[in-house]
Length: 354
Image (cartoon, rainbow, N blue to C red; front, side, top):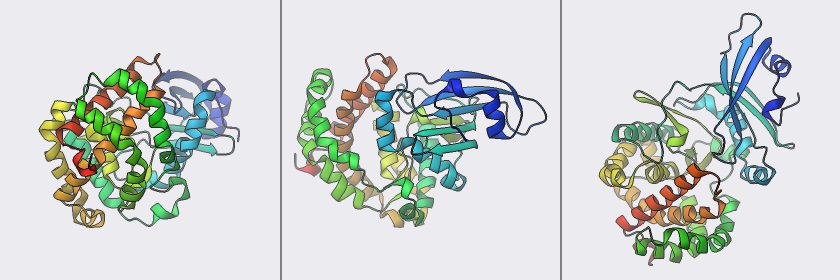
């Protein structure tokens, strides 16, 4: 059936046909405007004609309508990945994910629509403020349990849609870094530790080879790929994970390190990162730890290795800043500052001989 390209194209008639229930009235309220390129997101309120078992409020997701951004999302496969995630993997995820009521996709036309459970009653945490220790523990425990189940699962190599650990986009890291470094220097050189900034600049020629020849050779699990507070919703001592557009078969530290660097203030990370590493290893379980080849020493060693990669990639992202998006600017500024602080704290230039 026809898949809408715009929120305005979602009508009562279209929904009635797609859901198999008569929809008499609907209201669409866009949410998340200006939060990124990955799509149009809205809350829809539904009034059914007869008895229905579907909820009266859902979240609808469509690809972006911005022609300047749609090619990026297509190249990264974000909509196809989330479409396939709900088709193939969501039911296998033990952690809470939004229930999916409608999932249509056309990869040739870049047309996708998801109708998902509305989790608006759950709590959100400001990523810029950062998580509390207890919130961080909840997130890391859920993450370790997720990764522990999926390490070396044969489906990760059979599902073509999920891709390989090494993404071709990493081949462009050097070019992206060169085009962004002057801007990054103007914006950050005076506000981050000097040696961390210098190490990041010196490391960037190694970034692609480190990812390809070192990191992506490690055992893989099912990773979320964007595991941070903006994609986590809290219900007391439980967490729901949303936005599965960046899934990859990668070492679980892809999610672990990213969470530590994006979702904790610098002071909070310094206070509890060792505790969170131990909690992550415990949540992986014996089988997960053995499959990953992790113990406390190997995990910490890899963390020090990886810090400069995260510092280089996040700093290079400054070139994509939209000056109209104030929160987006604050997010990337905060991320760069947190990454650079961790680089400095852990003398991350030393493992790379910088």
